[in-house]
Structure formats: C-alpha cells, structure tokens
Length: 610
Image (spheres, one colour):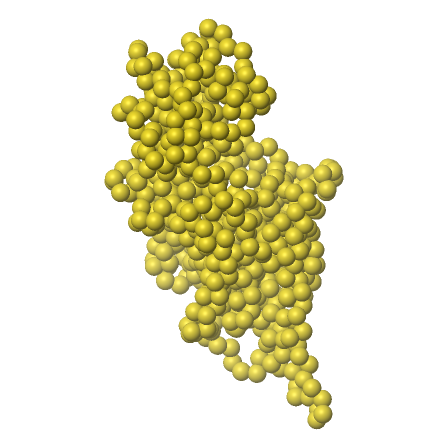
C-alpha cells in the first residue's frame, strides 16, 4: 500500500486493525467543528497580540527592535504604490537617490498589496497587526485542514498537530518581528499539490494550482519557501527509498504537472524575480557568517514560553527574534519515542527522517555544544555556498521541524485514539482504561512548557511635532530630502516612523533595508553604503564625543548634502545630542535652530548652489 494511492491511505491512519472499513476521502467532512477549531486558533493568536491590538496608536512589539518600523514602512509604501499605480517593486523614499529594491527585501507584497485598502484607511500598524495575527492563526488552520483531510481520521489529533505547527516557539519568536516567517499558511497546500501530482490525480488542475500557490508564496516569503522545500525534498527521498517500486508511476504526472506549475509560476513571477536579482539596487547574496543552532538550543525553552528561560535562551541564540529551535527537552524526548514507535510506517518514518536531518542541517558546518566546537562536521557545509542558500541563516532550517513535529503528534494521537476504540469491554465492576485521557495528559505535559506567552508591547517614542504637525514642509524644497542626524540604519529605524507620520511625502538618504555594498559591489549588506559625513556621525554615536572637523571634512559634507539633495538636517533630543549638534554645527559653520521639538539645519541655500 502507498500514501500516493488514494485507496491505500489507511496506512497513515491506523496502526491497529479497525472494526469498520476505512473511510473514503475526505474522511473528515466539513462541519461547524472545523469553524470552531479555526476560530479557537484565531482567538488564541489575538490574545498573543492583545497588547498590540489594545494600543494600535502607540504600541510597539518590544522584541522586534527596529523591525516593526521597517515592516510598517514596507506596508505603507506598498499601499502608496497601489494607490498611485506605481511600481511596488521599488521605492525612492529611502536611500535617496538610489532607492530600495523592494522585491530584494522582505516587503511581503502578497500581504501588502491585498491589504493596501486597510493600510490606506487605518494605517500600517493595523496592517502589521493583521498580518501577524492572521498569519499565526492561518498557519495553524492550514496545517489542521491538511492533517484532518489527508493524514489522520479525527479532528482532535489534527487540531493538536495544527496548534503545534502554528504556535511553536520558533513561530512565536519570529512573530515579534518577521511576519514572512509566520505566514506558512500556503506551504501545506503546496506539499499537498505535489503529493496529488505524484498520485496522478487531476494533473492539469493540480499543476496549475501548484504554480499559482508557488507564485503567491514567493510574494509572501522566499526564504520560508526554500526551507520548507528542502525539508519536503528530504521527506520525499526518504519515502521513495522505502517504496522504490512506486517511482515509475510517479514520474510522468510529476513531470507533466510540475512542468505546468513552472510555466504558470514563471509567467506570474518572472519579471518580479528579474527585478529582484538584476534590477536596480539588487544584490547577490547576504553573508551572515556561521549562525547555526547550538545543540543546547534544542532542549532549552524559548523566551516567550510558559517555561521560558530568557537568559538561557539568549545564551544560545542570535536575538529574541531568532530562537529557531528551543523545543524543550520533554518534546525532544517524546519525538524520539514517537519516531521509534511509528518507525515501521513509511510516511511517519519519512517525516521523522526529514525532521532530524533538518535539525542537523540547522546546526551549521560544525556542531557546537554550549559554545564549544565538537569537531563533528555538519552537512550544511555541502549547501552553504550554493546559490540562494548562501544568504540563508542556517539556524532557521530548524523551522522545518515544526510542521514535522505537528504531523507526528497528529499521527501518534490518532493511533492512540484508534487503539482506544478497539479495547475490549471491561469486566463487570471494572473501568475501561482511559487511554485517550492518559495520552492527552502526556501531550499536555510535554507541550505546555513550550506554549507561548503574550508578546511584550511597550509604547513607541512619540513622533516629533516637527513631522507630526507638518512643520517640515516649510523647510523642504520640491524634490528635496530630510536628513536625520544620525542617518537611519538597522539600529536607527525611528526616522522611518517619522516619514510615515508625514504621509511619505519626503525622501531621505540611507536607511534600513538590504542592498548592494557599493557601486560595482553586488554583495548584500544591511543599509546603504555610507558616505564620509554618515561615518563621521557614526563615530559620534560610538564615542559620544564631538568630532574634530577640518576644511576637507566641510567640503565633503557639502558634497554629500548635494548628493542627497538635502533640504534640512534634523536632530531629536537623544543620547549624545549635544555631541551630534556640536559636530554638525562645525561641519556647516552654522548653529542649529530648535523648531517644534527638534534641532534643524536648513541647508537649501547650500545644496541649491552647484
């Protein structure tokens, strides 16, 4: 029997003899119970983001660092492009005069474009909250639907699997800042369409759907697609190695349907992908160094979980938004037990192989245990330098384990429920063994420690009145730019929020995005390559001291201001504000003016002279 034959899928759903004939697909029919389960996912997601929903005006996801400002900027700029029928693949509002390649960044056009009316009507923070809440709940619901219709016979096991797949620690970690890594709701159906093609079912229709869904996922997130595809390939190889006689029957429909999917997806994304890889401000890879998971990360508990260990989690992760493993030791033990138990089942075994191999890959080129190199090589070295993979953070590969864990829990729970139904009637005076309750108790005991807690929300810094009240318009010439002091970057994203508060009606130099390292240098980097004036202001940030200024520095500043077509420089009250103000005073040979809560230098007279 084979997973890839419709009449034989009972292998997935029964490890014991059944008292009745197996149900034909769909084995779980749509009902109000489905709506209830999906509503529960949505309600839980809403609770997790409750602090944000309660304060959409000033609420800021604390652990997102600079990223909430960035994502709101993406959504706001996309909505403006839609409103004015402009190209959403690029923007000149940051990094003036070069602009930003939106397709080469994580702009998430698959959400930003359809939600543009909401962004325009209610603001980008509302879109940000919808994207995060809907993506978490949608991912859980998508996995539940696929599990309940194609993997197990009962809703309860599928609901458990969907909850784990949607709300696992790594999903919650990314939910602080990366909606593209929370939006996995298309990926279950991509896998399903590939399986349907392998079965030879409705090749043309499923091929078209596969192409459409792939194209849409590209506009949601390419890196999650790459990670999931790698995990699914490992699953598929493990499966066909166990069933080699089925390969011949799969080849023709997969080639036909897959070819059709490539054509359909190609038509939809060929131009955006050309723009991403070859268009203005494109880049060729983004180096992150070795950022594999420490082995200890798998058994520890994530920061925002019930058994959370913030210090221990921070010790073996890049930051709060990259806690990509952290399954906790009880779940690791359970997965080993379930794998051994279900090893004779081809599908469960293939899922387990994919899960463990993706976990190994996520540890990078060498296994590290609590910061100590073990001298044990990791298989990631075979992929690290391949196109597309070279920009991937290998620790994120562990996220492919999340749906695998959800699937194995669903299968195991379904087996227990099936076994409970076949237990003999107890003798008079004795009670039936509560097998279901015992198993559910064990699952709760294992999963509860990694269950998420509400995400931390704090008030964002207020927008200076200079921007909020429109005073800036008095100082900006047509086509001129506003230059924040210091220049915006990955650690300095508040200027993006000011720009949005001003209606995106002015541009600014540099910024927070990913682009090339310089003219003629296609290597990727965070933010723009810097001009000398920008690097001098960075030295103020690093030292807190007024910088020595020469006539050559002044000449260079004038050159840089003209390159930026600057109209006004703006400094808010902040750390080292006196040092920034004194340094710019020296560079421009003029003192700052304090206007509507900020210090400004009007440089229109300087930049107008050529």
